[in-house]
Length: 332
Image 1 (spheres, rainbow, N blue to C red):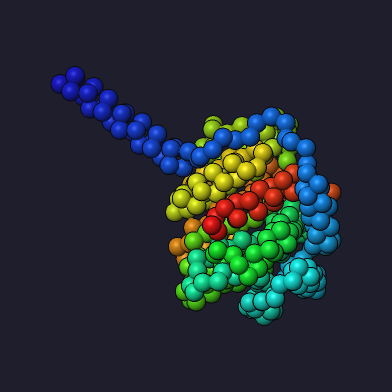
Image 2: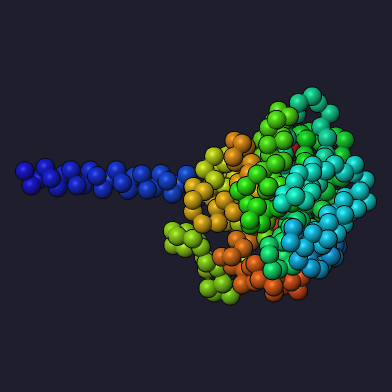
């Protein structure tokens, strides 16, 4: 009898170990090799890009900008529209109402010359959290979308797939997860139009890096897996987005010498669903957040001290160039 009980316990342990390994492999096994060691010298294009990103961040994060500071929010929206127009794009807006005020999503398109093409969405929210000018969260992501529009402008009328570059209002609380969230309105609009969204990238809090040991924290249980230096860019998705995450990391690692980690996880894990990719997942679209991990690294997260001087613009430029290469890959 005792031997049978021991055998049963052994079988249960084997099953649990196998299930744990399978879950680990599904969530955290990603293709390609992460970059290690010194970064290559910046190219002239990357130096120019870093300067452009800095100018955008300084303008966007000059003051707190959200519905509590509506004039500043409007000032930022007009700036974004003017920059995109200066790159030669027709600029579209989707207006919705929140707390009795008009808020808008801002959209430009790289159009495919085919009917009903696949659609790639690259987006970032441009509002700041209450009490902060929002340099990293999320002027860095907003600036990245602006510069990706410039870098990809050769594809305005000839992209193999439709690429929508979008700047969302109202991502921050109290609007996150409500009908007044900009990206949720935009994802619903694309679903209603029947657009075939096959990928969405949320560019979120991308500009702070540290080589110091202990500078990186993680939600449980990921601290047991990843290194404790906040020197990488992270690619994060919920469970339905594993194919897109795999494709994205394979491309980024193949073309860009910059440290990376990534994986998919259930949305209830803290941080996994905390951006505009969540909105697209609600409509069944695959979506990945590209982030420096925000509160798990950045000491100025949602603080008045989230100012433009905290950003590493050279590393941000490397990541943005890497995302340009990813997008060019994924639309083929």
